[in-house]
Amino acid sequence: MPAHDVLIIGAGLAGQRAALAAADAGATVAIMSKVHPVRSHSVAAAGGINAAINVADDWRSHAYDTVKGSDFLGDQDAIEVMCSEAPGEVMHLEHIGVTFHRNESGELDLRAFGGASAKRTAYVADITGQAILHVLYEQLMKYSDRVDRYEEWFTTSLVLDDSGACVGVVARDIRTGAMETFSAKNVILASGGAGQCFKPTTNGLICTGDGIAQAYAAGAPLMDMEMIQYHPTCLVENGFLITEGARGEGAHLLNADGERFMEKYAPNKMELASRDVVSRAEQTEINEGRGVGPGGVGIYLDVTVVPRKRTLEALREIVNIGKDFAGVDITREPIMIRPGQHYIMGGVKTDIDGKTPLDGLYAAGEVACVSVHGGNRLGANSLLDTLIFGRRAGEHAAARATDMRMPTATTSVQRDDEKMIASIIDRPREGRRISEIKDELGTVMNRHVAVFREEAGLQQAHEVVRRLKEESKTAYVDDRGTIFNQDVLGAVELGYMLECAEAIVVAAIERKESRGAQFRTDYPERNDDEWLKHIDINRNGDDVPQVSYSEVTFTQWQPEERKY
Ligand SMILES: Cc1cc2nc3c(=O)[nH]c(=O)nc-3n(C[C@H](O)[C@H](O)[C@H](O)COP(=O)(O)OP(=O)(O)OC[C@H]3O[C@@H](n4cnc5c(N)ncnc54)[C@H](O)[C@@H]3O)c2cc1C
Image: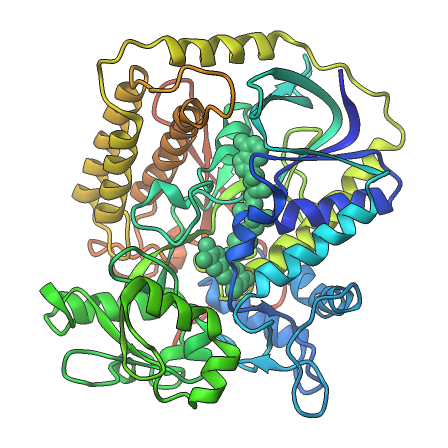
């Protein structure tokens, strides 16, 4: 049985950064990913990464902006760690070969981003995630003697020992269909977000919340699950993302009357208010009949006000996206956008070293909730989160491994998972198709658990999710083979998505106030007296999840009214 000091599930930025850090600390490391590492969703990150590296800036200002962006739900100890370590991390990336954009004096250039009081977003045109991910992968190649890679392996479960500590995982080799148990002193979940619970979403097809659901099934609490980010600028047709970098470079948002309506909602920051604020403003304009395009469901993003040369240089990816997916040349005419699901602030609850309450189990990146984003994540803070807490989790797990005996994971979980997969393959071709259920899930979540929420809609969404959970138990797959059977993995992923969706809905029903991305039309005010606390969600067998609360950590900044 393969055995490692540190086994990392997920090879996006969080996973690769964790692997490099754990290997540097002397651990034997393995990294596992259901797709080739450079196809992880991190590759799609466009706009950039935040760090107060300008001499006129200060990490405390970055931290304050993050606290305010989070609507005071973020844990300030974690935010201080992230923001104070950011400049060093970005310089480290630059030193290992990330070709960040430079200004005319040869210094790292920084662009403006939403909710930030200074220009502090370092970028590589609008392919920042791709640039960083490829450089980390180069490093991983260099570490071939120290880091084993399981590429195109799909983790199906975490394995616990009798004391409840995590001691390994079960995984399926996608190429052959063979299942195997891996022992590990520590497992780091770095398996990304759960955007596919919504339709449309900016997230890749692989963002199905696997790690969130696996940790939850193993007994780890989830936190801040109600906090779902809708990004203000997604293509109306398919939810593709137009990076916030566009507004950072100066693009305007216009309603059907040609008005820069953000004046009414955020007179100081305008288009660069935080994402929850801008998305709500857009949705209000649309709901009140000032939307553009067929059915008035869109808003115009006008990039033509940015000098064309600059757009072609600094926003070239979205020039292509505009042409290829909307038939619009953004350098010459406005493009129609609307708010779309983009990011999950919640996830597996961890401390500032990535530790979950389960011994031996860590989480970092979008799968985790530290919580640095609280009620709303600032643009360009997620890449930073993945790297800072990926590194810290890697270092901490490696240190924990030093005085430990290698555990041997039981193989009974593997037998259960083999039976589970065989039973999916054996289902008669009646019942519903996996894709139909997924479609209904995404549609209902996008209808009722979106920018504006209220009790009746949330209850309806919960009922639908409960029904879909039942229907998914008999949903059938077409492919009955073993080689690259993505069909059966799609069925397993659907189960993960339904678990995540239920946790999201239950938390959204629970929080009876409006804060950050959670706006309840039936409770439109923020209510610090009752709700300045995290909502934790624990699994409760097949029943509705259990809700409890935990405290928000404050260090320097007391809650105040949030205006942009
Ligand atoms: C279109 C888009 C643009 C974005 N732009 C920005 C930006 O400019 N700046 C910013 O800060 N943030 C941005 N974000 C957010 C940010 O990119 C993500 O939050 C971040 O990259 C997530 O990284 P990660 O390492 O946590 O997970 P991911 O990069 O999603 O990687 C997850 C990994 O887990 C693996 N995995 C998942 N499940 C399993 C399983 N069952 N078995 C084995 N492996 C598994 C996957 O194969 C993958 O390797 C953007 C997001 C999107 C969708």
